[in-house]
Image: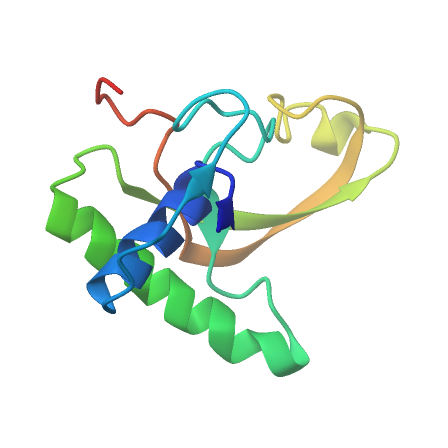
Length: 126
């Protein structure tokens, strides 16, 4: 059983069936790709893991790219990954990440193409 029919849950179910599991059940309260997780919106970053999970993030990142290619998802896109420090905005940071709610004291680019997104519903009818 897979809990959640967002990007990660549906990808997991897909790969389980490719691996020969025919009894995969996905449980979802809202609907496939409903964006119920909030601001996550189908985001994945290759270097968010550390220690024992680092290899899992790297492998997952590659599998998501392969999945998007296999399914022909034109909405799959790479994104820069920022490290954002909360705090009072100054003159130097007034225009920094204006789309973030609240104050941002600083940010720095962590990885120019280390984030990806497949927007919820990805233009498909479910």
